[in-house]
Length: 193
Image 1 (cartoon, rainbow, N blue to C red):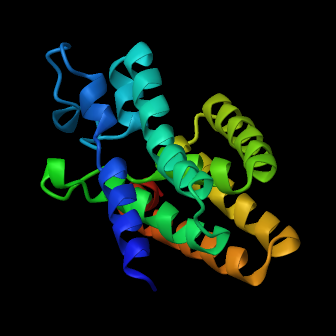
Image 2 (image 1 turned 45 degrees about the vertical axis):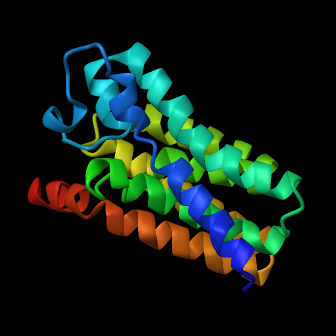
């Protein structure tokens, strides 16, 4: 790949590395890494403050959406867009500002999903809302993880039906990576059985 692609990916990684969950809690006296699950992501901020969670969600989705959108608008090739999207998600998950720790990548990957396939992403996000509401009503443990990963599985299924081979493969890889990032959630879920 040309050198510019790697530089663009580095830019996406750095954009993705901005820890909006930490930023959203500035001035509150709460270090989000020390409360709840300790995860610097939207779901953990939601436990501490709903208004601040909105800031974290917009920031985390935006850092997946905006860099990839900007590179596509600047003449980037669509086949490179998944590479840039992965870079942004990796930046969120392995932020140099947090000693290469970070969130689990769901909101940032949703931003990537929205820029690459807005119609299918809108359908998938509607699916997420439905699963999340059902999970809350039924009081499922690890409802956030279940809703998030179920949504990526749903989106991957859409890619298998309507996308090309490149999109199918990358959606499946993203789903596997996000599942791997939720290992502790799976352990917590199975420990309840």
